[in-house]
Image 1 (cartoon, rainbow, N blue to C red):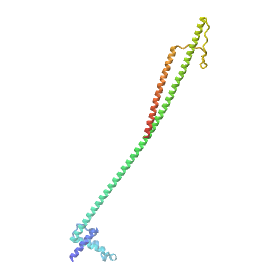
Image 2 (image 1 turned 45 degrees about the horizontal axis):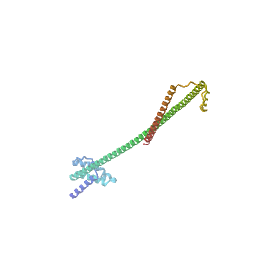
Image 3 (image 1 turned 45 degrees about the vertical axis):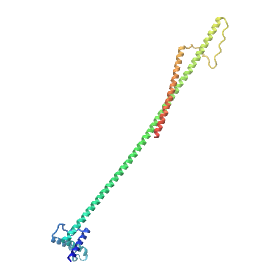
Image 4 (image 1 turned 90 degrees about the vertical axis):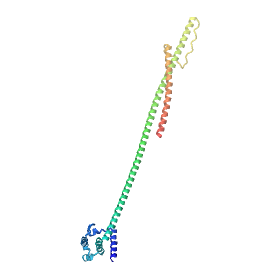
Length: 276
């Protein structure tokens, strides 16, 4: 009977440990308490209210039986050792489980932190890319405005130079007309002088005077008031000046053509740059 009772007690001790029942707390004794009298005294003190005579209608046989098992296990050396060892193993497993849970939580927290950091870096990179694209668009727009401004200035300058060149070209044309008029008058003076000389010679020789020269064409009327014949030196100087003006006119035309070609080339390059 003793062996059967001991086996039952050992089985109950392991059951209490497996169910995480703290027998020391149940009887309100220290884990190191070995005194049998103190253990029995603690049992009587804590279980008295669960005694059938005391509880009466509120009697709970399972609760009363648990107090009796707690007393017997803590008083039996083998059962108590089995209970303590099983409880220590359970507590150790619980601690290990909590440690694993803690490690898993730390790993999960670290993984979540890494994911947050990766997301932050990705968003930051995307924002930098958008900012770079905005800056490129701004530079392209500024470059296009600058090209348009330069092209407008170049067109204005070319227009101004065209007007100046037209003005310069008009001045030589007026000078051409004046020189032509001067040469016509000079020729007329020479003709009249030759006629006068011929008439004078005819009178001196006693012959008939030379017939008068035919009148000048109607398109070139003689001046109303005869003027003194121009000097050859003056005419030569004017002709040289006229030639210089013609040379300057030719050089200006060549320069304008070169500038126009350069302006067209710059406008084409500016258009290609704005497209890029």
